[in-house]
Image (cartoon, rainbow, N blue to C red; front, side):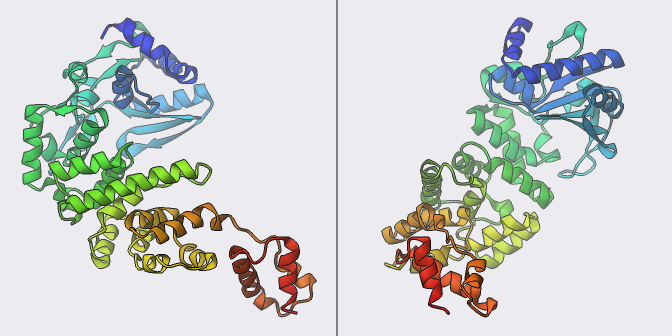
Length: 421
C-alpha cells in the first residue's frame, strides 16, 4: 500500500490519537529503538474501520521504554515483568507495549514460552496474515507498512489465512478467532486454512484449551456486532461440543432470532435505560435445552463472574411465564419480575408466545419499573406510627396500591399510611 494512502488514512484518526502516536515516535528516536504499531489497529486502519487499541512492539526493552514514554506524557504505567510487556495509560487511550519476541509451543493447546527476538519473529507468531501487519513509528520511515506474510494482499482479497499448518493445533482458540474475524469482516477462509481448521475440529482440539481461555474467546465472539451470525457460523463449522451443547437446530435458531428481535425492541423503546449485556442473553439461549445441573457445571468450569453466573442460573426460572400469562394486577407483575435482571427479563420476553406475558413484561419495563413512592420511613415516624420494624411492610403495601393505580399523589400516600396508626 502506498505510504501516501496510509498517511491519508492516518490523518482521519482522532487528532488526540495521532498526537499520541507521534509522541511514541519521538520517544523511540530519543531511545534509539525500533518501534512498530502492530495488530488490529493496522488491519483496521487499512480497512477504514475504527480501532483505537494501540499495540506497540519494540525491538528492545519494552519495560524501559514504558518508563520513558510515561515520563514524557506525565501519566501512569504498569509493568508486567513475566511477559516483558507494559501498559501506559494516557486517557482516554491505553498503550500496550511489548518486547518483540518469538514463541515455543511445548504442549499443544497451552500458552507458549517466549523469548526476546526481532519484529519478523514477533509477526510470525500472529494468528492470521491480516493481523501480522506492522507500521514503523520511527521518523526515518514513519508509517511504512511492513508485510512479511502477505497480509495486505489477503485484506484486499478478503481472505483469512493462517501462517502455518499447525496454527490451529498449537493454539486451538484460533478456531474461534478465525470464525469471529471471518464473520465480522465478511471474509472467506483460504482453502488450506479451512482444511487445517477442520483437521483441528476433528481432533477436538478445543478440548485441549483451558476453560478460562475458552470463556474469554466465547465472550468476545458473542460481543460482536451480530452475535446471531457468529453463533450460526460456529454451529456450522465446529458445533458447541466444547461447551457440552448439542448442535443447534431450527427451534434453536428460531429462539435466537427472537432474542435478536427482543434486544432490538428493548433498545428502541428504552434508550434511556441501562445497556444490556447482550452476550449473556445469547448464552442463555444457547443453554436453553441444557439442564440446570449441567449448565451450572459448565459455567463453573468456565469461571464466569458471579453476576453473570447468577443471571445465567436465574434464566432457568421459566415457570414464572405461566404466572405472567394470566391477567394479573400490576403489583403482582412487579413482584414476579423485580428480582430478575433486565437480561433475564428480555430472555423471558423472547421465550414466551403469550401475548399477556409479553404485555406484562412491556408494562413492567415501561411503566411499573418507573413507579416510586414519595414518602419514606421518616414520614411514617412523623405520623407517629409504631413500631419502626413494620415500616418496610407498610411502605410495600402502599407501593403496591400505587402500582395498581389506587393511589396517585403524595397526599394519598400519607392518607393510606395513617390507616396504620
